[in-house]
Image (cartoon, rainbow, N blue to C red; front, side, top):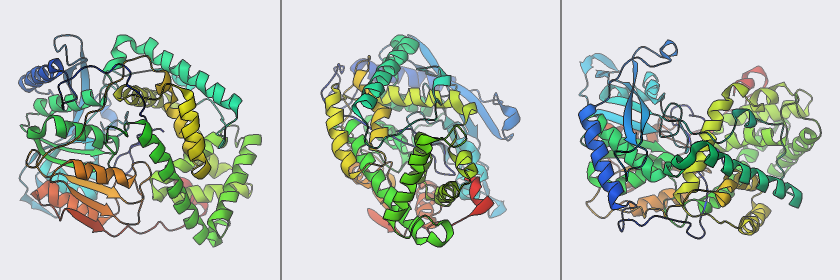
Amino acid sequence: MRAAALHSAAGSLLLTALAAAPAGGAPGVPGTGSTAAELRGTVVAAARAEADGIDFGTCSDAQDMPGSMECGTVEVPLDYARPDGRKIKLTVSRVRATQRDPHNSKRRVPRQGALVYNPGGPGGDGLYFPLLGLLPEWKRLGAAYDLIGYSPRGVGRSAPLSCQDPEQVFKGPSQAPTYPSESYKRERIAQAKAYARGCARRAGTALRHYTSLNNARDLDVLRAALGEDRLTFMGASYGTYFGALYATLFPSHVRRMVFDSAVNPDPEQIWYRNNLRQSAAFEGRWADFREWIARHDKVYGLGDTSEKVLRSYERARARLAEKPAGGKVGPGQLQGAFLQAGYYDDYWPHRAQALSAYLKGDPRPLIEQAAPVTEAAAEAENTDAVYTAIECNDAPWPTDFRVWDRDNTRLARVAPFETWDNAWTNLPCAYWPAPRQQPLDVRTGPGELPPVLILAAERDAATPYDGALELHRRLSGSVLVTERDAGTHGLAGGANRCVNGHLEAYLLEGRLPGRRTACAGHAEPEPASGKRARQG
């Protein structure tokens, strides 16, 4: 499954997939997830970065940026076992702390250092995160902290990774069979093998160094370059996973950490089994969305029960398979648009209205919302490449398609909405040419790590709630804030004032609620129709 775009205040994510037998993991220092050479290399790289700092200046696309945002670079080793070898540069952005109380401009606020953010992915680009400080929900944090965004290794301007010609990304319109035929499976296997070969051909020997562990090491080098003795970090979705790796590898370097919509870090779940659990969770969220549409049948006319709404959706799929809307939107594009609604319920009114309009003879809203944006092809290709490389490198995957076929066929019987599309996204990992690592056992003991804050929604589909519970168990002293009866992916700075209150109390004052704390879910979106609904 692909990472969603940076969404409102919270960021995005995605994650997915793997398990099976080892495939060439390197020997490491027990319990660290690193070889001794990589540990030494991280220390060397961090010391150099601390000495060099970051020379912030005008961003390269300054004409599109508010004047307060600055950009710079930090150099990291491609291979931490060889810190004197090839280097790559990560692009970093900053908006300095305003040190002004947003409710009283005459009152000065003490600066608390840098707050580094990652929006998830893998492949998500956090470079524009500091601009969130312009939004009301982030002004108090922007007063106390330098807001720091960056493009992780391989992403955007940070030694970008590529696996195929961007023109191949938005080929379509495409099919998305819920129960694929044997011939369709053979076609997707061939595509997965070709994609894996393309990654190896374009990246060469560098391909093996795009990993979550290296993302965690890069984060420590960034901390040092910013002049921070201890890191204040917020990661969303996949950002919680390598943030948890960081907490395990460098617990004494942590000041405060927020894990927003947590990935299950159990090594047995990284990544194949996480993928299967994610597909099952999306089925539940798809049901939530259909029930909401049914409650507003007077607006949308798609059916007054969840089952009737599903029949309306399937009718649209069948019609698009025969004749794509605008020659651009087929079942695959419809699936992608409605998958976004599984992440964020503020998409619900717009998607429901587009489906309703299409079935009534007006395809324009659906085309506007679901058609590929070809101008974004290069960015999408880069995101896909980084996503695939990191997840394939991070852990062992099943290498026999019969395992994938068995597991996804069984799951699709009860969770057909996203199961096979999720499998096809990750299938290149079955044929991956680079060595696989063994996942680090994320875990900290009492007193090893400062208290950290975990945010989770009970019905989050992209990172199912059991992942937050697992991370909470593994990070001693952590606190879990749960949004009840809600499923938005990425809670920080979003619609729930209770959640935001706990976030600000922690980051601004170091104050945490009880070990397990609940917030009532935010209000469901209001239905929309007509022109207003076409803006989603």
